[in-house]
Length: 189
Image 1 (cartoon, helix red, strand yellow):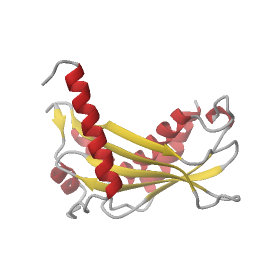
Image 2: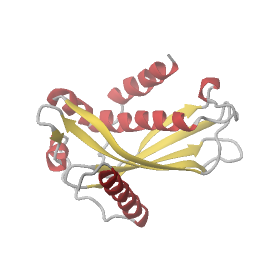
Image 3: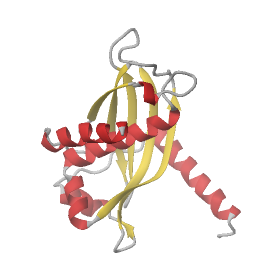
Image 4: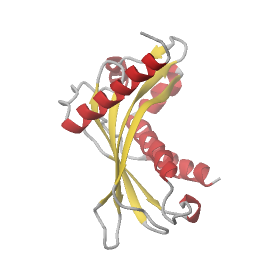
């Protein structure tokens, strides 16, 4: 139930918030660690980070106008790779913000950076976790990912993707290497 409430708490305000240009703007969503977020070690469960990252990306989609385009065209967001590095634990009642920004886009896939930042307390401003996400919008009727040029045109963005940073390059290389190993292991050339 808590995740449905968080979904509503993120989505409803996003529908009425200032519009974002995903090529340059940052999405900020504020949270607090609740008892149901904890694992037996009494810090936020690693799976909860991934769930909350979905809400950060949803905020970006809604505030950029891409969510409306996705509904209109029956596109669905698909994750194809995520890499996360945990730096500091988030504990019970800790306030934090999730920052989501688009850092790269290629023919059909985007890379987003997501950071969990302490909001208040002695660690205010420090990063609790840093993640890179790769995915896109999938057109189920066409059975392929939506071309980024078309996706950006839907929301009036004409900006070009920034140059890849070292961490994004490493993430994409790691993701590609893992995909190649899995192909070989399954007997696919």
